[in-house]
Length: 359
Image 1 (cartoon, helix red, strand yellow):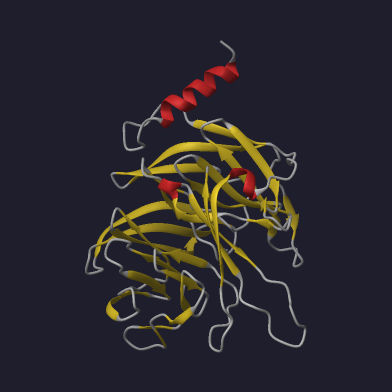
Image 2 (image 1 turned 180 degrees about the vertical axis):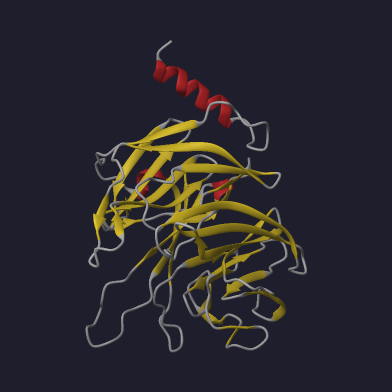
């Protein structure tokens, strides 16, 4: 039996099993070549595409969308400082929740998630978590001593992610990433240390799109990037089971990591930055950059076929799009497509939100 055939058979056998079973001795490995493929069109891989043109009305002009949550009735669109609601026809409903610094109010939106069963919406804002109903009415909040960078429901249990930055060490500093389990009242139940990064000096890195958890119906998977200067690639996807992080899949980049001098010549800059790894029922999507140019690797688990794409998958206009998670058990994703200026004398129109189910 050839080596390639052996790994293909092994891949299928392991993927038939849930990740919460006993960890396997062989880590799944997927190669990401340095060479890029010819254009891949969304229409060639999509079962269905729903395009929602968001109306542009007073009070509803959108800027940088960092998160999109989808229900049968609504779209919740998260920006840095506000969350807007639109219906599935693209009509503006209103701003979500209350903006401000008081109880039940948020000044910033670090992350948000929703419970499709109860309709509850969780918003991470600075050092607190706020819970609203689906209409944006305040229900509960909890403050923490640290900044909350991320919130997600894992099997309806709320988890938050925090990072302690610049912990002094004898020969440098440490950034500590912790995942914290909460109960329904937002009290801390458990703190799960995930990663400690050792640095020569204080550094912090961030990226607006945060897709750390992947619940694909067969298991829950976790990937958290490191965006501070390191001459390595954090290339492992973890299975999250029994509150443990179990190495599950490794990405092998043919292009090696290297460092460039920054403008200040103090902190090196990575040439390859791995931002998100999303694992659905039938697909693996890797979002990364090379020299600040967007790339996307799409891998079909059923055929073991990978596509390494410049900028993303192409829509009908030839515009590259990054696919982001909606319902990973159903291979459903969203994309944001900007609308070109129709009239240079007026403001730019709101974008189109695409809801895609892959084949």
